[in-house]
Image (cartoon, rainbow, N blue to C red):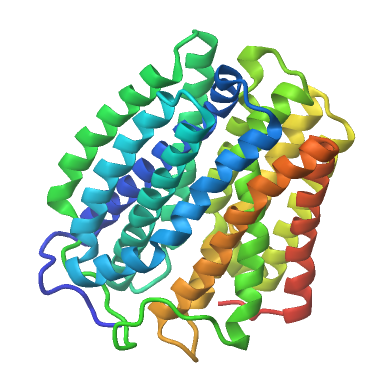
Length: 387
């Protein structure tokens, strides 16, 4: 990768702060929606199967946008795309709070997923560019900002739900805030990011050396997707928490996830990549089994805390390992592995809804615990070298 400094005259700390802020805004939009899923399900009188169908639209939109997002970033640059996509992403958020039917909600989520991936490709490209300026891995800290935003949004969601604020008003307030911060940050984005070799090919299927990383990302992101979309419903229907406590499971998960991502680089240096993956997968499985086995408020909160720590480091470390591939250019390897990982988002939430409609949410969460166990087993079989 080239050193992207020619058109970037500002101190590298400025770019790091701005890109971190953009990650925060992206996470804020997504987690704001996730924090109000129980409210929207109740307002539209959706069954678990109906909600699962609607949730399928979000990752479907995400996957459809992959080729266009890569093409736009390559043609227009990540700085322009991330600003425009954030404005659009937050605008679509407001439509979710105004949906009046299952069809409207599903359509809105499809566009929300489409816009969200546009932001995701562009902001991660900005992150890679900042890593080039620093000449070391800092991607986990950027993902930590995304998770920190999720915690903040979950906390706000808990408060506004308890106060009786409807999702439409909640989402509009967040959108206006995102617009203001994005407009400010647009002046300080990285205008020339790191470029990769590969003749303009943005996406490709990974070779055998990257396939294990892709599967690990798939399992972890399936867990993440289930927690994002179903944690509030689980606390509402299985744990039977009081309305003011319904969002605490999601908030606890996001808080531990954010904390874990800020220490991921240090922990990997101490333990090595394989052991961190093993520990992460074990925590995911243990936490979910605790929440399923003893669905009371204290034990469920502890379980979600463990799950948050478990999923925290997996995706950033997978991305970092893919970027160090010796068989494919960094950008192509990252896109290929992330594409497989995002399929976990596509599969996870609707599978949870389907199994819940057939049996129960507790069975669904038991299956997700198995995905965490798969992360540990794959890491043990592959024996990744520490970076």
